[in-house]
Image (cartoon, rainbow, N blue to C red; front, side, top):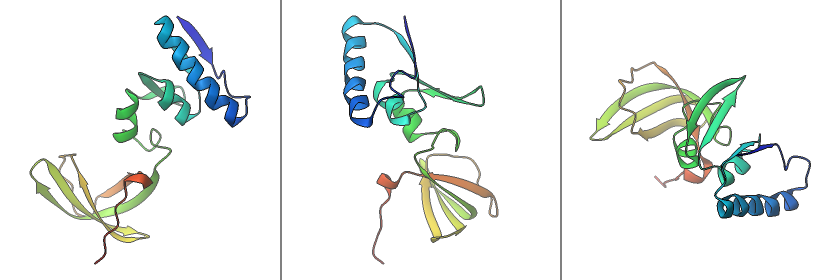
Length: 140
């Protein structure tokens, strides 16, 4: 097992990108397990098969990079996303999804579809982590 604690932190961005690829290739070629500590989300996503997100000494979430990115369990786990606080005005079940109307956000009212099946109550506060790459704008 190899332990790496912030090995690329002091390097410039270009060299960091090159070495990130080299470290990944080396670990895979040697079939070696590594514990890699980093504060760089992109580095963790690029190198990790399994990621442990820590906050104030506590485990916030454990999972595959894809799961961490697409289904973060808290605002702490989703720092790359934009955060919006609003209030649920209504919710509708649509088979395997729930559609929420969220008011009180700077953009007006958001229509959000989620696979979260909890009972959303009108007036309930909700925090949305929004991936800017996943936004779709529609003409009226």
